[in-house]
Image (cartoon, rainbow, N blue to C red; front, top):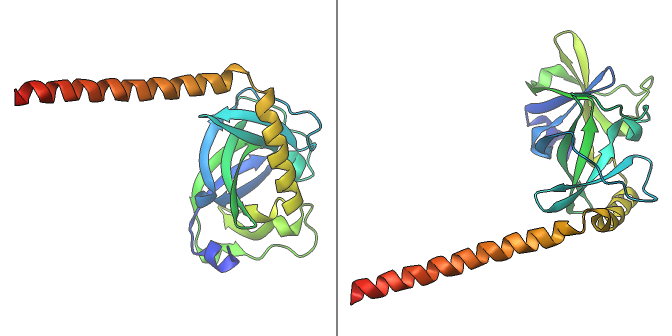
Length: 202
């Protein structure tokens, strides 16, 4: 998505990493989760904390602070996981991004958005496509498509697949059991419906 397309969207979710405030487009955000147990995956990149079970889907969880060259996340009551979509090479990848706290949903006008600084920023400029001034403070607007390289996305996928094996072995069987139960319920209801219809026609 081009920067021009980005600027047409006015709603952003802001969050803190340390004392710095960042924001990403709400159309990239799928969910905000409370902190939960993360299953580690051996030999993962240092920024990948592990995987979690999100409604039957194995989701890789990223320590956003490490990815941005900051110290690792220290868990608090405000720490949460922001589930985002990232488009890479035409494919949509879901990730969970650890943040220190979620701040607010902001409505930003184009007039509030300035180009990112070309020098002097301690964060990689390719991650940031703009700076927004809100209540006398600046918020860094993230381009999530540029946070991860193609190779990193491939690595995340591989480690996510490995992480599925690290999760509770009962996890998959429980999903399959629930699915089978749902199907059985549907079949029973269909049979009951047919019996009732037969009685009415008689």
